[in-house]
Length: 297
Image 1: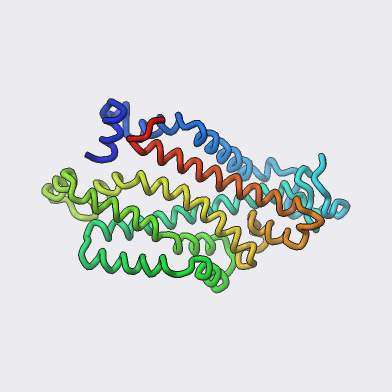
Image 2: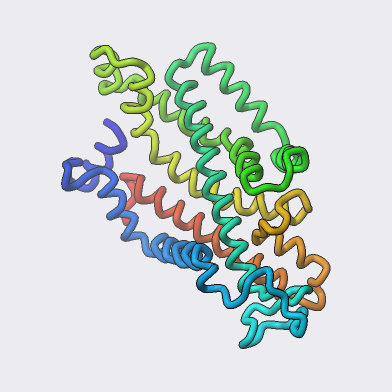
């Protein structure tokens, strides 16, 4: 019995067109109050950052020399930086980069890891042995060292950061998908697909992979938060982005010299990273519970 059938049986219904598997998952997720609040917070923050040109009271390239290092006030609700630039505007524009890097890096990691795990779990044998040994080696290498080295070699661009983080975070998704494929490849529906003469590629992506999506989706949410934090660490250590591409991590890096006399410069970018990562993890918990047929919501 597949995960879809397990959930349908728990809910007391079959996955019909009007009551699909993902429809039941969405209904169960909607009953998870903490996850729904977290999702709402993420949506509000994402929309605010996406609409930064309309919401931001000032341009991030518009310094106010009469308000250098000004504390939070009615004029500048998050204060200003050492150049007199409104911090609220910088946080909104920086969020566009940070959130984009988090989402796209997770997509790269899940896509690459999912492909490797699918091939490894489906074909087994020497293919599985080689791919899993490569995965083990990749897991044993200090991630931060490799990320910083690649960032310094490739240059501080958003696309480069996305590729680097995505290409160094595929190992866990690969293991997750492989484990799912090892379980599902001997199921009746896969045997029936083989007997009907379907090609391996079609069986992998049309029959098996959709049934292994549940744990991969949960892991993807965690990867988003990890990617945002990792990008912030890169920026904080001086190996990340540079203007005009600013992010929350870059703002933290710039605030280092002013922590004592202008603590708001580090507080607000750090607070945004904390809130987003916490919300992403709570959404991941909600998805995990919604996808688990044994969990009552």
